Amino acid sequence: MYGQITFISFLILAIVGCNVTPNSVSSEHNDIENNFIFLDTTYEMTLNYIGMGCPCPQWATAENTTLFEESLNTIAIPMDSLFVTLSPQTATTVNPFSLEGGNTSFVFTGRLSSNKYTWMGEDGSVWSNLVFQYEKVRVD
Image (cartoon, rainbow, N blue to C red; front, side, top):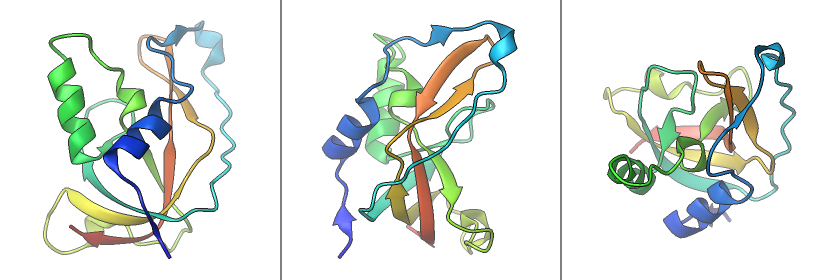
């Protein structure tokens, strides 16, 4: 049986271990090694593609997208605590954008990483976010 992940539990999972501000590192740390460990629990998550022009995570729940947008004019919640990086389970896993309909909202079935994907922003700041490895996807 698939576990149903809620906004609150996703937010808690996403924020655990996140720093409120990124750690600055020198440019010699461009190669950040990422080895993921995925939880045994399978979740079904509805995620929206955001399409920001950066090497940052591009997927979030509708609630987390709204929360992030509302925070921009106030305390600015870091995007890496609300957004996830998607990873297909295998090379033959369906790409969501190959599905009919032209939507940017999809329902994914898969597993969350127990550790975080670490990446460096253009300004040299290091960010970390969860990875969702999906095995199935359908249009929402």
